[in-house]
Length: 155
Image 1 (cartoon, rainbow, N blue to C red):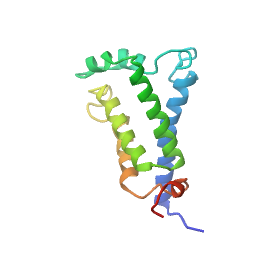
Image 2: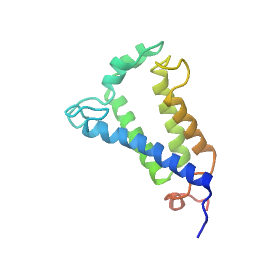
Image 3: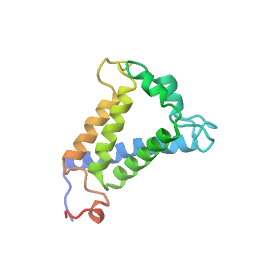
Image 4: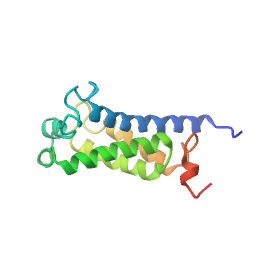
């Protein structure tokens, strides 16, 4: 039995937690569970998962760009596939580096749609999540309790 350090346990919990944040957003937007997405306004109900936020939630210097792509089928599919793929990869511990960097890009895009953030002129949860994702990408930490060994040539 391999002993897991306290630091490794923290990274594993961060990896799975970040994965759950992405995966939950996907599930809520697909089924409209009444959390961030109201019942009856899900993707399955034919409502764009990006329209509301991009059209009405963006502000700052890039808001015009984001509002112009609101509700685009391509943007919807890229966003939803990103949420699902990043979420499942992090939860199951596979393709962690690719999923983490993809998550950083998504977080930066979401942050840039809200320049300047409402409660702090620079830092918000998107940046904090991005820093955690970078940590997952650049360290070997968080690889435990995963299916990584089945997908990686590095043992």
